[in-house]
Image 1 (tube, helix red, strand yellow):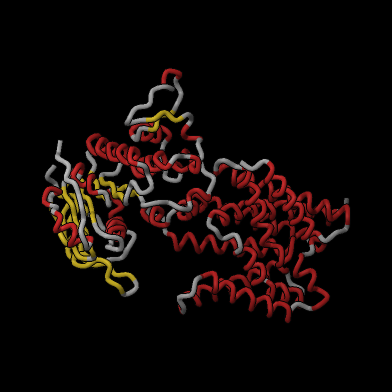
Image 2 (cartoon, chains in turn blue, purple; image 1 turned 90 degrees about the vertical axis):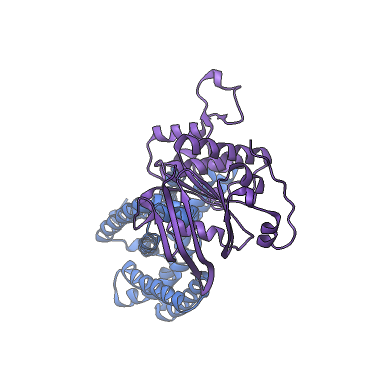
Length: 254
Length: 252
């Protein structure tokens, strides 16, 4: 087993775990497809990073911030629902992304490439994963209450706008990390499938978020092993492993 | 009993350029039950939310002790319904944990809302009008509760932190008649036990006659503010538009 493979595996485990955790919150807020949309918003950033030889997560994160800012700006200017605005920004990004990403790297941008993960990148992934984890852990109960009822949350003195902003930043950071592992097309699945599976299997909140974390980790672990053994693309392997867990969960659904 | 706990003067609330509440003025004394009546869209829920401090307003809302933010007087809020809660797998205990509270307090509250934890063998057969024994209630999934049990849990949740005032938004929507009765019995019991002041939005006129000390008829403007006995058919048809049949219950 070479050390590069170990770097990818460890990065994958951390990113998968925190993606599952965040996903459990997103699913409860009915934001299942937001991760998906933001993955596409990241594409031009990935393209530029590949052109200039920078870290793809870095480029992705900058474009995600820009995308979120635009959505926020459009929301003030119009009375269109958030969904429509996200839709506009995401297809526009996709179009720009396809023009920017150099053709040989297109596959990498869309589906990720874990064979490029270096030691430094692994350390950065671990640090950022833990950071996101801590932030989410802090806002988790507040967000759950706000998801149940904003009025109830406000009456408890929770500053919803502030918490939402922190939450959105965490999602952006998560997506930026995730594109490295599974690429911009599949990063939404990294967030959503473990949470959906855990939801099928859990009867309380604790089981739900722990399950999401564990399933996120297992999906990345087995997906990357599958990639190693068969030589299939790593991103799709991870997502298919995750999907398999989901299908199994349907049998044991509570 | 004579302390004024809430004083509202010239309250105006607008939303998206539309006036929802117009020049509302009234007072509530400690220990009173004020029912708020009115047709759909009359601004009843808006009034509760404004009193709760989650909507912007013009005019004066004064809670005693006077505070800049009504949260400081401790108000428990029971919302109309929580449609999203069943999307989240969550146990009753975890729901209470979202609001910081000790296990002891939660147990006391469960006791006072009549959902007793089943842990002694003699308890099993003993369900009364006021209370029901639910095995291991804290571990139960919110989505698996009956609507009556869920409503009680919401009341219980509002009681965490020992509030002086309860705001209730149509507490019996979607509950069968015996369930409704027991919710109101519960409210009356809690009011006596904890000396609560209750503000209650309802469509249920029998409750107005049975529980309320005062009622406020609302249709954007305040149409009347009176004791329940003075709530006549004319007033009601003025409020709801059209003929309303109602049966006045004699007070016990």
